[in-house]
Image 1: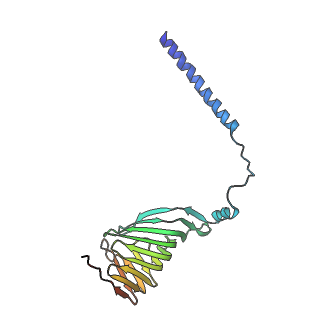
Image 2: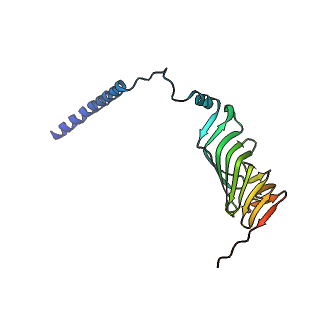
Image 3: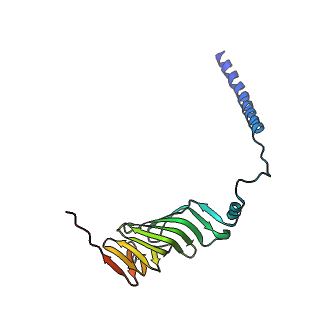
Length: 202
């Protein structure tokens, strides 16, 4: 008898539960708010036009490895490809971190950047600051860098705080001459160094 009662209960639940689910779905459809297709989209007209004309990504994060094995991470507030076409992209408030395969790290920040992956070139523009784990802090208004390998240049004046003092130069180049070797930071074009010896603690 108990077995028959259990079988009848299972059979009844198989019918009752689907019916109850259908009832709940019907209630949801009846209570849901009717959407007016003529209602304005909650975006300003200028913002909609900007997003239609430009491919914008907010808060992008990219990472990868160069041909020499250096690991690069890229972060920005936003990246825009003008007019929706492939090619150079513009970024705001950029931060780049490079973990060098030969040891050490390099961090670069800038107010803006223009990145052209197809042509293997990027320009970091406006208050560019390069910091190395070896104690160098270099500032410039423009730094160019290749995307595929460690090749960072400042074609114009740079100011640097170094482990031995303050330095001014007309150009700078950070690269790895030999794969897997330590990176070399070279200053050229009228280099001036104000030597500031470290004070020995007594």
